[in-house]
Length: 69
Image (cartoon, rainbow, N blue to C red):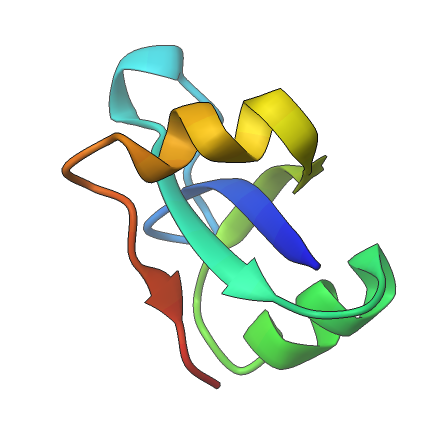
């Protein structure tokens, strides 16, 4: 399954929409996503499962690249 992760670059940053970044990662659960990213200094705001039409829409984006961890 593919998850979309919304995050801030620094764990100390307060979430602000204009500075929110996203990445895509393959995992079986949200917990696995968070576990894979725990060594990075990210302030994770939200993790969303992508499937069906949502996944197809995201694949059309030039920023769509699944992170290999």
